[in-house]
Length: 170
Image (tube, rainbow, N blue to C red):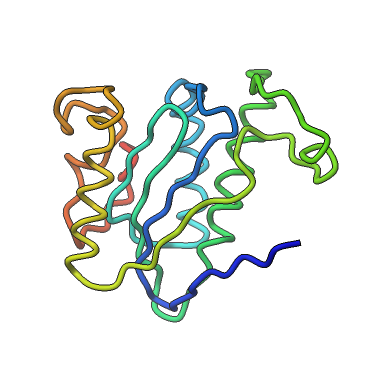
């Protein structure tokens, strides 16, 4: 089994990409209120600063800064994914994902890909680049013509260094 190496920097800033298994799905935007609730509940239990976030139909990009002395972003994503999955499942909304033998063996019945991608932010220029990447992503995917037109983005509420608890529109 491969060992995935992640760079854990206490109090560090990170860029994340978290995908659904079904890359044709629109589940994240169709169930945005469930995602907001899961995100917010984890944020309350395990605080972090949301520098930027964008929710697309089948994936999320986010830039977080963790509290000083804390480098555990994996637990936060695990809980967000699990709470969203349970809530969607409990409402009978389904996922539309055929389960492979590998997913069944691992007990993976939710809509998410098994892992997520993260990048440790190196400096202010890297932070600015990844915040801009988040906000521009809906344009690159052809969802809107201007970044500010996408409703599931922090572009109107966040600036580099901001810490709004309503980064998802709460």
